[in-house]
View 1 (cartoon, rainbow, N blue to C red):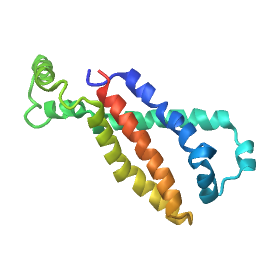
View 2: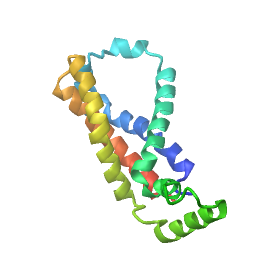
View 3: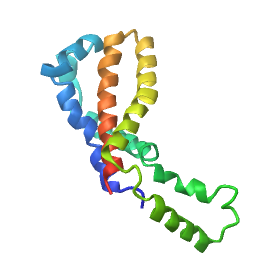
Length: 166
């Protein structure tokens, strides 16, 4: 199996754990509150159980979406069902998959490799999404920088954990 569901579940906790540090008032919490328009009164009125529960579910979706970006072996199925693989019998497919993993099973399965691809995903996906939303919401560069750097750190750690876990 090219991935372990435990790694995906554990990496789903990373945004919450990093968020406790990143958005702490002694780190970047106060600047974030200023640029986002959040107040302590608004925060106290929030249903934190719902916020953290939904955040955990969405973090799981993100972790699951990172799988094919950080583990290159996830693409082995496309190798087997391409034009050449369409006429292959079931047992031949399994033999091909087994041979593929014997040859390529652990290549590029390091924390650093996963962190690199997690960071690339943050720059190419999170930054544009957050940046576009922030511009339409009238938020400035500081807002974009605080949130994008948070997601770059989270996605690097998530990608590293998912890729290295074997």
